Length: 166
Image 1 (cartoon, rainbow, N blue to C red):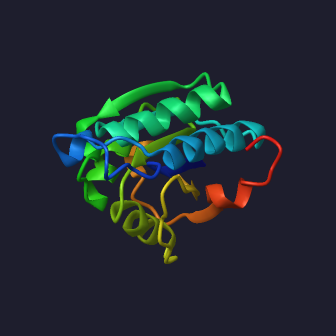
Image 2 (cartoon, one colour):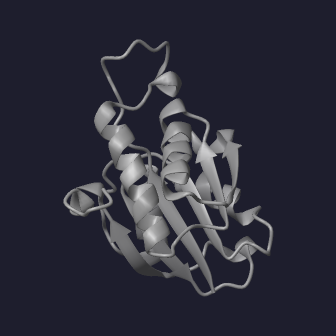
């Protein structure tokens, strides 16, 4: 059994100065949501063994903020292929993960995360900013990641806004 966690980047700041979509930063709300989700995952015991993020600034910053706020000790890497990835592209990134990783997090974008969730679970969701989705997959190796799994959890930051650690 393997668990794939999908984290969509936090809300971006459309009014900040940036040169391209790839360089668009997080908004203040996006920063707070990323930190909240990092703490939520840590408190729930759902920290990944490895987190791979899109190279986009907003995705990288979301992972950095979540990891720091949750005091995660997992390995982190950047995959250029997750920026603008299709479902197949995201699955390709996951399929290259070493066999010792039981829980993998991918940090990326819409509409790919909604499409990937549907592809792997059959369920329809709209993955809003800073949403975290856990998918349990009946596989022994990430090479077989393109397998029907089940939705383990879906957390949205607004659901934790009133919690003491938010």
